[in-house]
Image (cartoon, rainbow, N blue to C red; front, side):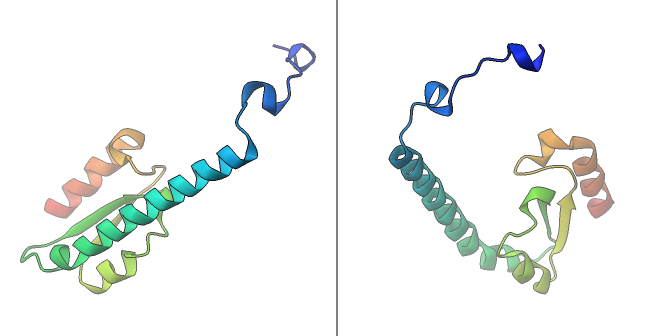
Length: 105
């Protein structure tokens, strides 16, 4: 489709949400992410106490997880899966399984 034939609709014509609704949704998402972060953080001591070799796998897009330094300091092998986010098993399954194989192999 040529650019000249693209519809010339405004954002409000295909996204009727008001700024307040968008802001509310963003706050809801931020609150949800904070709750998930708190839940995961609460599990870190349990994970660190496991009496076996441990690996924590995460997608490259999640490189800034606040608890990664704590895991690394606790002798946990960090496994960043390239070209993936929250679901590395879908985004980059080959790299994920290769990383698992190298950990247990």
